Length: 268
View: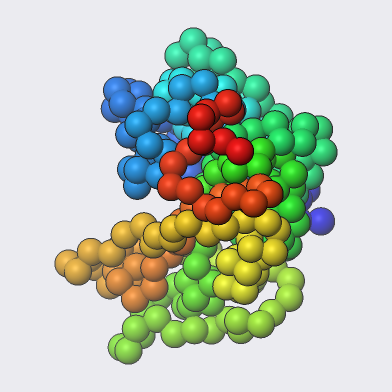
């Protein structure tokens, strides 16, 4: 089962302090809102809003959102990753709630409990991304914001190392089951089971779950001078990630450009 496998894998990665398990540092805490809001999607303040950091353990997301003034719950399948959240919260004197569960089972959380759900790259560890979207739609208040980042399908299809013509697509786009393991890719996490989600699932699935897509970015990681085969070199050919800003629809309300707070004058 992918959840149990990936729980063990991320526990092991956290114990080894792998690159995606490093907590936020002093430089980030100097301006925590800026650290989590480089794209400006959250506006000038998130003080007092209810935030769910989904599949986001590791002592970074939860701590920075809490330091910026939000009321934070963090969910992760990995006990070791959540231990980092609790450790950083204690060191920084921050209040967070940590919940150990899979991103596609939020049954212990209340309906419409959150104003904002943020999800770093993690949907690739679940076979059905639309099951995640359905869970987010239930726990997010109508009009609330869902910001998620995903691995681009083509990046998961492509070869790790370049040929003379670039990075060949070696995995089928229409596939079932997890991707084959790779041992030396900075675009994949060793020991985990990962799944490729097609664009119709990533974007169409959001719309079918009751969200309005307001913006989409491909975070830049390419460097023209990078060595062949490096993360930055491969990123010139294949953008590794996509970041999506989506709004939970409510009755008769169109998409709006700023984060809504409970009881704000523009709320229906």
